[in-house]
Image 1 (cartoon, rainbow, N blue to C red):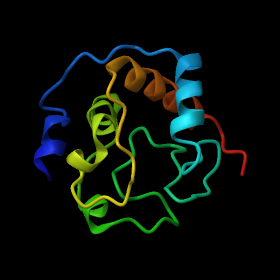
Image 2: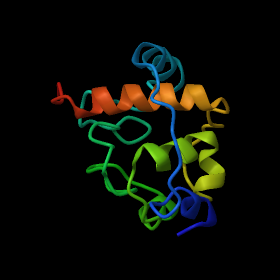
Image 3: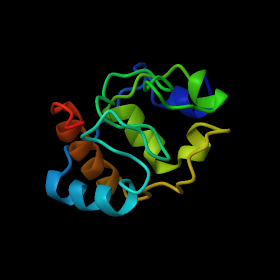
Length: 125
């Protein structure tokens, strides 16, 4: 596990803001949807985010992950996503994801709220 991943594990609980679904929907649309689906099990340039919460890193079926993602060994939770979305390339050195992150904590909380709700719905395809 990387040093970045260790910060977000269950041994270091932190208070993550609840987030706003509607704000998160807008952030997702403009910052995430170009590469990720959330209402489908189909992957695009990035893996599907459907069912992300509680999933082990690097395990979405049908997506070819970097070795760094496959071997990270992190379960995606509000806390791990909050840390990851701040700076994905720092959290997972060697990731294929070309995203600089969401620097504002409230933006991260909002998009996490959206992903929690939408990713738990039955997939459309």
